[in-house]
Length: 197
Image (cartoon, rainbow, N blue to C red; front, side, top):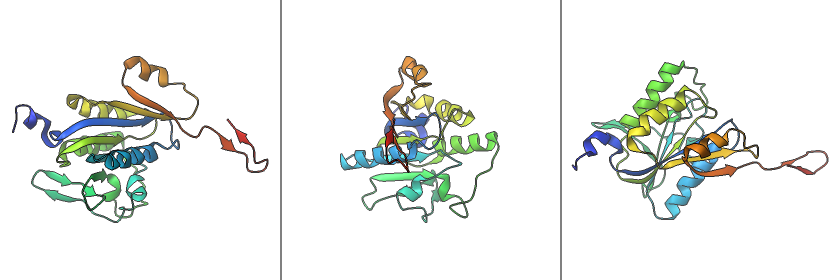
């Protein structure tokens, strides 16, 4: 083991970490996280997705693996592999719920503890990219995620938003954005069949 790898623990084999953020729910953040992972896979990369959207873990269903189980080994949790090639690994609270549609009603400290445990205890192995799908908004969960990942020097973040760019200025100023995706740029009026932007 090289110097510094022991300190990185289960993230020692992860080359790049990308956070996917949104200021509000329903803008397609989990969809973008999934599409990024699939795009990296098709480019020949090994990818992990860490779904820390604890109250809305939709990625297992998007990748049709919601009925799978995570297992533990000596070094931590083994993520679910989405494909036979093991080129996409996924960890989500969705795998830990008794029923996939169960609501997660936890106080902040319990959520933060699980996020820290996911970051420390999932055995990712060798990955080119780890995509971290965060919950919508800005909360303690985001602070816990960023603070826990800070020692691993994330590559940056992708901010998924609607065309209103309020709140993005701070991210640009911090020079952490890899990209801004304005999703849902128009809405089709159901009666007039016109697009509104």
